[in-house]
Every structure is written in C-alpha cells, then in structure tokens.
Image (cartoon, rainbow, N blue to C red; front, side):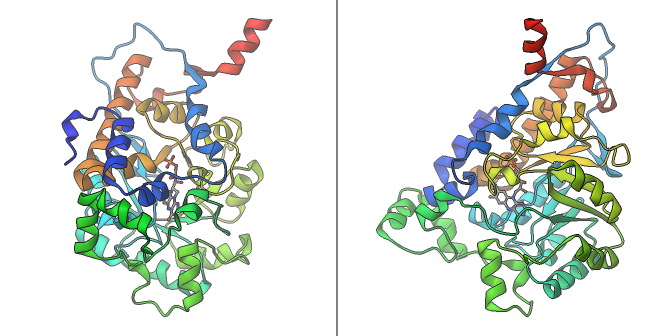
Amino acid sequence: MTRLNKIYNIKGMRDAAKARLPRIVFDYLEGGAEDECDLTENNISYDRWKFKPRRLVDLSTVDPTTEILGSPASFPGVVAPTGLNSLFWPNGDIALARAAARAGIPFVLSTASNDSLETVAAQADGERWFQLYVIEKTLATSLVKRAKSLGYSKLVITSDVVFNGKRERDLKNGFGLPMRYSLKTIFDGVTHPAWTMDYLKHGTPKLGNLANEELSPEARAALLRRSMDASFTWNDLAMIRDLWPGQIILKGILHQEDVEKSQQYGIDGVVLSNHGGRQLDTTMSPVDALAKISSESLEGRILVDGGIRRGRDIVKAKALGASSVLIGRAALYGLAAAGEEGAFKALTVLKEEFEGCMKQLGCSTVNQLTSDLVEHASQQENSRSI
Ligand SMILES: Cc1cc2nc3c(=O)[nH]c(=O)nc-3n(C[C@H](O)[C@H](O)[C@H](O)COP(=O)(O)O)c2cc1C
C-alpha cells in the first residue's frame, strides 16, 4: 500500500510506481527509444535554463491560474494522452481523467485508451480532449465523430508515430497484449502481488475505443504496434478539419517550418514534443526547440511536453513562451502508485511546486513569467569567457 503522505516529489512517486508494477509494465511506462538519450536529456535540458529572480515585488497574493487555448486551468498543465493506462491501474483512464478534473486541468484521452470515449465521458467530469492516431481514415472519421458528439472539447492529432520507435526494453521483455506467460513474467507477477491481484480480477485491458468499430485485424495490430497510416500527410488534415469544428492541436512538432505549415492548414495549436523520447532517440529536446521557434501568429498556442518532473520545469516552459505543458510520465507514476489518488497527488505536487517557484522568482501572476527571467547556461559560459 503506497503511503502518499510520505511522497514529496515526482521522484518519490516514480519509486512507488516502480515498487508496485512488474518490471515488464514499468519498462513499458518508463522506456524510451534505442539508447534512451532523450529520456534524460528531455529533463536535463530544463535544468540548463537558469533563473534570474526579481526582488522586492508584491507577492502578498500569487495566482497560478491560467488559460490554455481559451480553457481555464488551475495551472499551465494538461494531462498528456497515454495508451494502455489500465495496465497501470484498473480503469486507469477514468482514474486519470478524474484526477485531472480534481486538479483543475484538462485531460487528453488517447486513441489507445483502455476505457472508451463513452465511458470516460460518462464517469469523469472536467475538460476532456481527444487524441487521434490516424490508423485508417475511415476509423479516424468514426472516432472524431464520436469524440465530437460526446463533448470532447479539443482534438489532438499525434504526428510522430507513423512508425513505432525501437523500444528495446519492450523488445527484450517481449511486451505485448495479451501478456505472454513465461517463467520470467510469472516470477515478475508473483513478486508484485498487489498489481497481479488487480490484473487477475479485471483481466487483460482491451482497447476500449475499438470494441464497437468495424476494424480489420491488421488495423488492430497496427494500433498495438503503434504504426499508423504512413500515407497520411498535410493534405489529409483537411478531411479532419472538415469534421471537427473546434480547435485542433498537432502534437509531435519540432521544426520551425512545420509550425508555420500548421497555420496554413488551419491548425489552432501545436505541441512541441519528441513523444517523451519514445520514438526517435537524440531528437532535439522540446524546451530547446521552444526557445528557438518563433511564431507571432501562434503566440499563446504552442504547448510543450517531455521531461516535466518539477513545477519549476513548467515555470521555464511558460517563461520561454509555451501556453502550457503536457504532463506524461509524472501523472502515470502517480496512477501506477495509487490510482486516482496517486495521480491527483502527482498533479498537486507539480502545481504546488509551480506556485512555489513563481513566488521565489518574484511573479504574482502567470503572465509575469517572461523570457527575461531565464537564461541558458551556455550564455552564462559565453559571457564568462568574454
Ligand atoms: C506509457 C506512455 C504511453 C503513451 N501513449 C501515447 C499515446 O497513446 N498517444 C500520444 O500521442 N502520446 C503518447 N505518449 C506520449 C505522451 O503523450 C507525451 O508526449 C510524453 O509522455 C511526454 O513526456 P514525459 O512522459 O516525459 O512527460 C505516451 C507516453 C507514455 C510514457
């Protein structure tokens, strides 16, 4: 039983998740592509940005609330779309969505969720967005129509999973659904009894969104393999634009020209992301991309994810011009450690750290987080050598 009152930061939550999950599941949650350089780089790149706090400002009230593409939020965070959440906790998508609602931030349901669009809409309040993987165009059309009719407010199209990244932990462990039994996985299960009891009680999680869809076995396998319609290009976005009257956000962008192109194609926002280092290793870190990308017309509509483990990371992302961050593994550690309560605690830790960092920096509102408050360590080295 995880004792949440003894957990003070995301690292502590990660330790608790690691203790509860069998190795094969923890590796799926944690793992990155190939040498996993980006797994650490995504986070370390935040630490290379150094604060320049302001002093003697009125901090008698500090307000961490904000708007993310027009949606109110208790701090600049969104729970990122993640697939197979019920592997971490029974009905993991519902638990995460409820935790996000309690924390006052939006939740993004993945195409590869275990709880369906309908179940999550019925069982969780709060603002919900839907993340689309285009596996087949007819399936995409059906999913988008379902999300629209169920009141999901924004559509996030993930663009960086045309082919699955080479995740060597999963290859080594033989990770897949349904789980294959071997001496190793049985030993893994026996030594993590709390997780195993839940798994036996609830059974192998299904891909909830696909249960009632006419789907070829190839498409089903493609989703589990995370390989998408490789012929889907910018021109095909028009088809989805026609179906979805609300805001569309393109996730997985890192190149300046793609940011510009997204505007030509009627996209409302982008998520600078390398998929948490799970797709192409040694991809530029999203926070460094954020610092380089300039787009006046997309101002306030650039989000960023990858490596958010501290509230101060969110402060830096905001200062460098992001509208919000997406929170991936940090929320999943909480979910895996203690379900909805654990995820809520993880989000609360990030929110409190965010607010604490605003105070230390001398900012009483989120709008005061501006680029003059941070400097890249390399600039400090350059100025030393002058
Ligand atoms: C276990 C796991 C599953 C994920 N599944 C999806 C998914 O279904 N769709 C998607 O767009 N991104 C998916 N992602 C990527 C996240 O949305 C996000 O980009 C990434 O986790 C951010 O990095 P962080 O985990 O360091 O915060 C997944 C990430 C993890 C860790």
